[in-house]
Image (cartoon, one colour):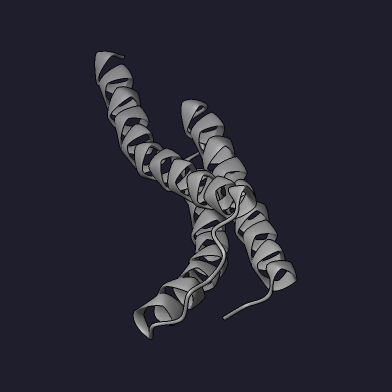
Length: 112
């Protein structure tokens, strides 16, 4: 079982890295909108790195619970989980939007 302080630190780590991942995903959309697909995909790769860190923290909690340990569920932890799930949704939609912008560019070029 982790202490309150450990749960808070873990929660803030998830919030930090999920937020970074979400920001990178949003930057990827902006780049794709301007047809800068290579740069956009680099931002998605950055987002994936941030997700890995956040997910590792989440996995620690899940493994502890699976092993029968009971951890404190705080509002900060719930907020961290919400942040992570929102960021994952944004990243998933970002990949779809990049594909959409690539198709838009092909259509525009075909009309020329």
